[in-house]
Amino acid sequence: MKRQNVRTLSLIICTFTYLLVGAAVFDALESDFEMREKEQLEAEEKRLQGKYNISEDDYRKLESIIMEAEPHRAGVQWKFAGSFYFAITVITTIGYGHAAPGTDAGKAFCMFYAVLGIPLTLVMFQSLGERMNTFVKYLLKRIKKCCGMRITDVSMENMVTVGFFSCIGTLCIGAAAFSHYEDWSFFQSYYYCFITLTTIGFGDFVALQKNRALQKKPLYVAFSFMYILVGLTVIGAFLNLVVLRFLTMNSEDERRDAEERASLAGNRNSLPFPRLHLQPWESAPPADS
Image (cartoon, rainbow, N blue to C red; front, top):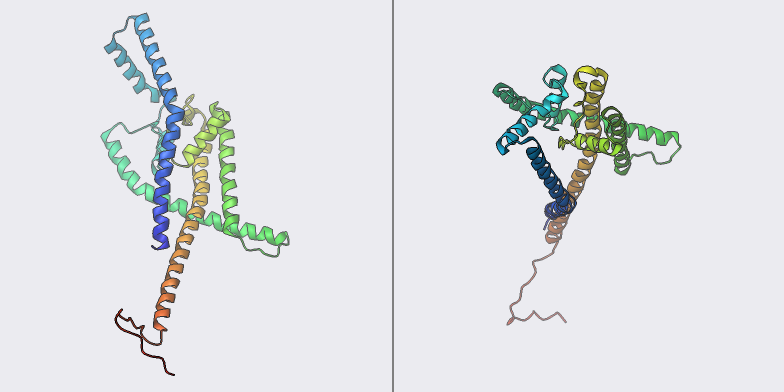
């Protein structure tokens, strides 16, 4: 079996194994907490219904109104700043879910906007990542020369190491800033930055949703927008390195397979005469004496 096929099969097996392990761990960590939280909410519902003499139907209607009003607590979402924030989450595929178009025209335009915007954004971040990696490679080479190192070539391991620590630094800077502005813990802010810059975008933590920040804190709004775009570039540059490494490995496997095929073909062509295949009842010709 070709090395590429073995690698692909191994990746498929590893991915599904990773999914199974993840499911088991999340089940163990979150299942009991979810059940306890559900029981507490049901107990609180019954307490409120009894205290204020609210019927089940009225309580559900009130609950629905509160859920619909929740996005509006953060202030107006669809002025220019809020719309720009939403546009970023669309074309970067972050998709927090903190806001969504309410009109059919808005939903139709959102689909059209995403179809054009997502590929454009992916290409832009890939190009920026490549330029950033080229610049980092140049800097590392200059640093090695300045330090008097005999070998100044920059290896893939050097680039991946720098990329990894750049990602960690970017996440830490964002965590420090958002923990200050949003009153989150450092861990919560770090989690928010990671979920945002990896474009997972659960929406359990969303910046700019407190105290009408979109309207009243323009500097913080500008920082948030720039942080997302710059952070995605840094993460994209690092992922470019990882993908490039995998592509290099595949290319090396293809080259080895081609060399092996060429070697086998050469060995067959170099035989001086065709090999005799004797039947069991045939005997080999006698050797010359």
